[in-house]
Amino acid sequence: MTVTQIDLDDEALAEAMRLMGSTTKKDTVNAALRDYVARVKRLEAAERLAARGERGEFDAAAAAREDAKRARRAAFE
Image 1 (cartoon, rainbow, N blue to C red):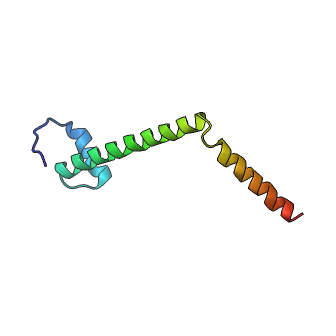
Image 2: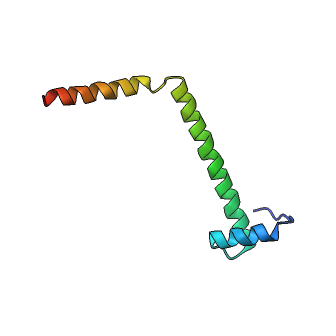
Image 3: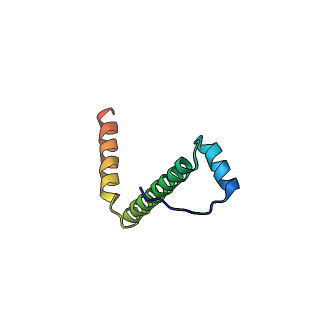
């Protein structure tokens, strides 16, 4: 772990500590960094998924699912 000296917004830090339930500044900053990285990774994954949808990569799977649903309904008629 790297030791770094930074100036922090005391009010924002106190509010983050309260919301996170953390007891130390170090834990709060580390948790905030991990949370930020996780949120950005989720956003990137959602963007990749949306791009795949826009390219039509899921159309065949959706059509197969609809065909299977129709076949199940027809079996009970």
